[in-house]
Length: 359
Image 1 (cartoon, rainbow, N blue to C red):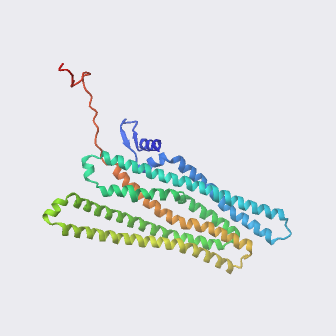
Image 2: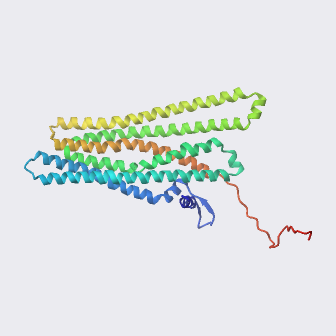
Image 3: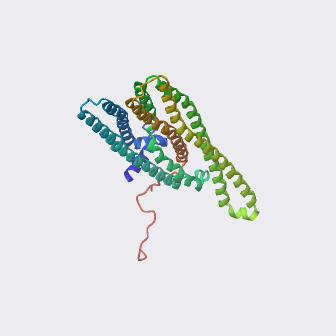
């Protein structure tokens, strides 16, 4: 962990080759440079897991068609079943579990190095910077803001994996049920603007809530620091009223954020159900093949499409929360620090000597 923290600090504070001066890099870029290889490795494992996930419906279709044709050899069906078990166990079992373990570890390491940097920065702030921050803000950095980073790393690859999974799943679904898959595609396309609108609203609501929290923390910290003057002049009721007003405003914005989060949860559940209902209704109306090999394979593909549809809005929400937290931390890290001046003595002789024996 010590070497990891040193590597993160060296990526955060680097020497500009043109001016030969210490420059602080953006926090997001520093984290990307520090954890680029674990991030790349987890992305590769996600691709392997995606390939195995898309291969599973193929073997399900082959196995069900083997059941529909009793004259086929028994060894062929056994081979299909073995391949189905191996693909599911290796791809969606071992590979997925290993990817999650690396993502969890990487998220905890990111939280640790960020908290360590917050402690170091807090001890090195200049008097002007120290006056513009407070203890409550530091506690927020170390608790709620840093906690959002491990949550984001678990699902970070779904930002680009989910659209790819949906597109490939829809292509395979079209091969099985024909034009009825375009109805599902239309449902997906229509839901994208709605999901984006709710995600933007959630981002604005959370940002407003964070600003209200900072205002309340600043006022509480001001009251605690000047508690003697506050008691001397009898300003308790005035400050209490101001704090309660800010708290009420904060809770109102928190309620707005909760409502928007509830809308996103509704989207998680409602869109996949609407997709299944619309696709199978149209497929039945078009007199499509309703055999077991087609229907169960389509249901398996629907399940593959359903998960990224659920995770994509959640990933967007966690990514937005982590982005806000990183921007707040980056603003804190950009504050001025105490300039350490190294004094050198012009003479090699000691400035003061203490001798014993009265010499």
